[in-house]
Length: 209
Ligand code: ATP
Ligand code: MG
Image (cartoon, rainbow, N blue to C red; front, side, top):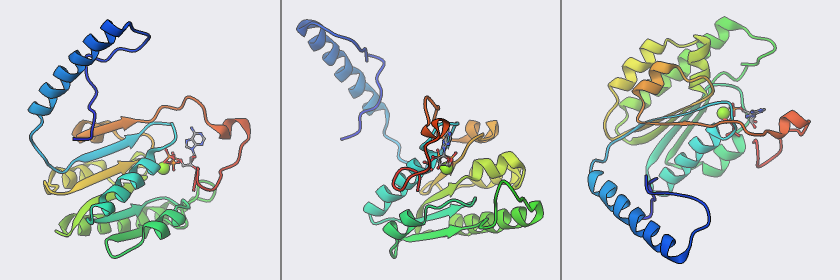
């Protein structure tokens, strides 16, 4: 097993050799107990939210991992964003990549058109949820869409509750609704500590897009 779940026995800071050995033994026992207790395998609802950077990137990382396992994935990008380079890199027979909300900008919002595009994206998501070949669906920025009220939280949650147990669904974006966080199995909040944008540094290839 290559994963390393967090253990309650973890402690940081300098240690003597004896302290280190004891600490490692405690971690080992703790991890073994935890791994023993984790026998179930099932599809997850995953949420990446918060104001810090890395939510979409982490979603694309999961897509890349799933593709590495030769499983089929679908990505639906709900808001205008230039991740086309990633789409091109990952492109292949196992990936469906959609970009809805092409005209979606913060400056010139056309609310009705934006809502229509979000609904079209959500319809695609529902289609992929029914497609037995698709193992992972990445709904990039859907949290923002829900926060804006462009899709109904109740409608999306109802579909997620019916999710097939063999499928993972990733929902990224700031301001994930509390009810989605409640329903999800895996929730990570990216917390901003620093962002170069705040010191006048532009978005850069490979870092932002
Ligand atoms: P990424 O796409 O790099 O994984 P993200 O999905 O967490 O970031 P979003 O909230 O979707 O971030 O914002 C998209 C864009 O805004 C990215 O170019 C990102 O670098 C930038 N961004 C993210 N966090 C911040 C921040 N705290 N301040 C300013 N810009 C940010
Ligand atoms: Mg994002």
